[in-house]
Structure formats: structure tokens, C-alpha cells
Amino acid sequence: MERDVSVQEVMDREFVGVSESDDLRETAELMLDEAVDSVVVLRGSDPVGVVTERDALETFVRSDGDAPRVQDAMTESVPTVSPETTIAEAADEMSANSTQRVLISEGAEPLGVLSEHDLMTASPFAQTANGPDVPGGERQVAGVSAGRGEAAAEPGGEGRFTDQSLCEACGSLARDLSPFNGQLLCADCRDI
Image (tube, rainbow, N blue to C red; front, top):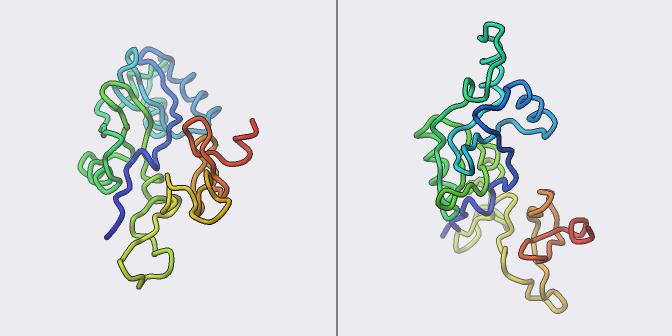
């Protein structure tokens, strides 16, 4: 049976938020500085839209010399899913809305963003850990440890996690994740 991976296991918890009235040029500079391809537009703490690199570029090209605002470039309908949504359901949501990302939120509080890239790195169509013909049909999800949340069973492995997975602080792939302050962290992030 295939393991249902939820979006909270693969989403990007770090996102950049801006306001509708922010200057689009400053927002584009922020996107470059933060190395992100999109920003979430917030009204207070409520997400009301998203601006992508393409949205900003199109608005700059079509602007008639005025200083465009974020509201001039944003896409207002942001598909939103809960953290418990499976990646397959999130992919369906993206497809149905012809978008490359969905916002993950619990109630009105945004928790993160899931992009097509995140889905590709966590594809449930990845090969199984021991090859394609493993009895039981369990498949390993790329970038997500099959034993996530379970301590290693070998002696001395208590509190450590097996397989390679993503550090929840820096996002790097690591084999030595350990729980620290409610997150799975690599050795570098635990030392900070």
C-alpha cells in the first residue's frame, strides 16, 4: 500500500509576505534578495493573493510609467489546502486551478507554500527503497524518510532518524536528523 504523504511533510514553511499597497519594484527586489519566485499577499494576516516573478515582469512591461503596486500584479485567487491534505490531492488542486503553487493554511493562518517543485521532489512515483518489486508494494518518497517520526530501532539509535530526509530549518538533505525543539534538524542547525 502506498504511504499517503501530507503536504505538511514537504511544504516550504518559509514564505515571503507583502501587502497589497506595497511598491511592486521593492517587492521584486525583495524577491531577488530572498531568492524566491513568489510572494504571498497578505491583508493583515489573511492571505488574499500571490505575486510570481512572471506576474511582476508582466506588470512592469505593461505599466505606462506609473509606479505599480503589488495589487496591480497579484493573482487574487490562491488555492488553499489544509496541512493534512495529501500531495496527490494538492496536485489535483493545482491542476484544477491551473496554478504552480498552493497555500497551506490552518483556518486563516498561513503555514507555508507548496510548489510544483516541492511536489516533484516528493513524488509518490519514486522507486521503492529496495527496488520496484518489493513485497508489500511500499514506495519510498523522494526527500521524505519512510521512518519519519520513528526513532531508529538499532542499539544507540534512540532519538535519531533513519534514511535521508530534509532538515526542517535549512531544508538540506541529511542522514543525521534528530528531534530538537519540535523539529527534525541536521547537525549544523542543532549547533546554532
